[in-house]
Image (tube, rainbow, N blue to C red; front, side, top):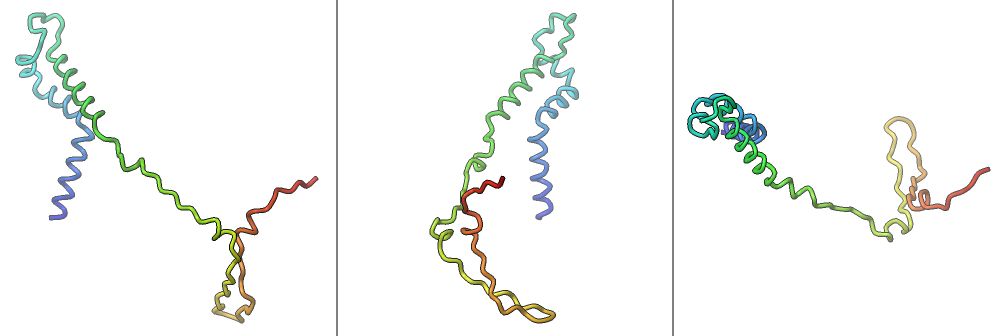
Length: 126
């Protein structure tokens, strides 16, 4: 059941993607019928239209339908994740070092302060 659904969805996506090519292929397969039924220039055989005007109309219609489709409105949403200023300026918490698997473990706790190491005035060295 899941495989059939996957094939169906893949086919639908490919049909939507190749819609213009399918219109041209339909024209090539049914050129005589389209010439008889839809050709505007039947009385002018020197033009050798053969229903190309009908093909152009169908391609314009397919292109306009394609341009009307929504272009992923969900992609316009933007989420920002910001840390509060108090979290950056608060006193750093001491994090003990993980014990080593081999040899002695360090007894000195590890302390990392991102606010003090990043935010400093620029210095000029001559």
